[in-house]
Image 1: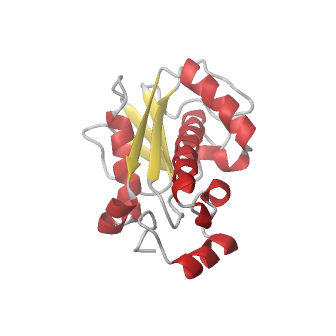
Image 2: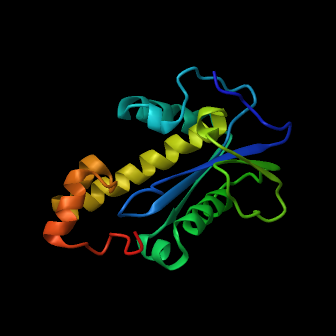
Length: 187
């Protein structure tokens, strides 16, 4: 079972999805869970299948104290780079919380201070802390829905299956059709 809290404060876990993708936005989520929250199925979104992620998303949205989403477009990713875009998406997701956290736990090893809220970066935090795992699920599910919608506009890139990541089929489609307006030019 994942750990519930890193601190004794009102704590938000933050994670992003889409950092390694060739197309589409990067999406981040922040989640504040009650200290009493427990769910033995909760884990890093990459370790869960779609059905488990969707079921957990419903539970998270009902039982979380609060949650927020942030989205940074592929154009902005190209302007500010993927690391800064990921951090900016996390900042947006924190901005979208209705309750101000007193402490932030961040998946990964890089983050820019958010206002005056102390934070801790945790490598592989999405497989260690429930709030970060919950954020990883919300971010991934939100981004997957965006990529499914974009697939309707550009089905030749097979985003409904690869979600913009560099599969062999996706890379070959870029060769065959050239990049589209949703591809990141800096990758």
